[in-house]
Structures are given as structure tokens and as C-alpha cells.
Length: 269
Image 1 (spheres, helix red, strand yellow):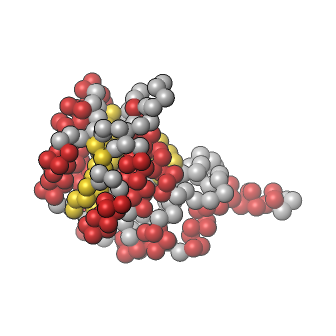
Image 2: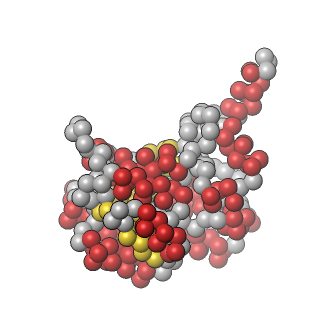
């Protein structure tokens, strides 16, 4: 493997949700590795602020619920930079109010379910559809942010986890249909990640319960997820496509109840 395969020099990347926790960390890391980054976010003022910090970065406002806005994001990237090498679909419907509304299926509001899928799944599909001709030209790739909850059952976040499971299948479908054209498509599945949005949405007790089930000594940070995204986006992962890289500190790797077992054994039981 080439020693510099992880570098992104000369490449152009779009990061949706690029002004948020994981998106911002990814934009910073891709820039540090030589890429020109489009920070695309509905929070346009924050995107502008971050773009001012990063050499060569460009801020765009995008609303994933609006198909025309998503298409414009790709076209404006081409107009500004002249090429596209990486599409990182990271944005999703999240936040404290969303967390309260996203419960179990029996309690699910249909309008909330539909909006979750419109933003998370349809928005991602339109971004991919619009970007693919340009990624084919550059032999580029797509990295989708999903979640370990898309691979497990939970008593909450039924809409979010279901929408991300759909994106996993979309990831595989794109990898299968476009690999022959030189386009890779992969997904990163974070666990609970300590972002400002998470700290606002989830009480400390819930965060501690998830942290107890990780195999590390802490929850993941945005920079941990950014490293996984940057790897998949780079030529270092040139033989990786159609895969879901779980990046959750090992919480999805073990049997349920590890935390109480660990506590019991530590107490000499």
C-alpha cells in the first residue's frame, strides 16, 4: 500500500451536516489531509463559520427535505471546484425534540415517520443520484453515516434506526451497481457519540448506561468517527466497498448484559 494513500490531496469532498459534531470533525480531518471540502448544512451560519477556519473550504446551505436543494448542493460544488471525489452523507433529522418524538412503533406519529424518511433516506438517495455521474468521472466514492442501531433492536428511535437500515441497503445497492464504473460506496455505523446535539438530547443517565456497554473506557468522540470516514473516503480503502464499518467502541459486539456481568464479577461475585 502506498505510504500516502490516506492523503486526499487534490480531491473535493461534500460533507452534509458538515457544521455539526461528526460532520465538523470530518470536514476538519479531510481538510488536514489535503481535500477541498464543501460544508453543506441547513445551519448555514455555522457552516460559514467553520468554512472560514478551514483552508479552501466552501459553505453551502442544504435542506435534505427539499429535493431541489439537494441537487443544487452537488451542482454548486461542481461550479465552485470543478470536480467531485467524495460524497459524505452525514446529515440526518436529529435533536432534542426529535429524540422525544422518536419512540416505539406503536406510539409513532405517521407524519414524523414520513419526515424522518424524507430527510434521511430520500435526501441521501437524491444526493447519491445527483453525485454519481460526477463520481464515475473521478472514480470517486460515497461514505454514508448510519448507526449501530440500524443493526440492532432498541426500545426507542424506531424511525431513525429504520431509516438508517434503509441507507445500509442503499449503500450495498450502489456498491453493486456502480463498482464496475470505479465508484465505491461504504457506510460508517457510529454508536452513541459525544456531540453537542447528543449532550442536549440525552440525559446523563442514558449516556452512562450506553457507556457501560462499550468495550472502551469512554463513549466515542466525533474525531473517532471522522477517522473512519476519512479512511473509507481515501485510496487506502480502495479495495473496500459495500461494507458497513461499525465504529461504536465494541458495544454491538457482545451479548446483552455485559455491563451488569462486569459489575458482578468486579464485586467478587
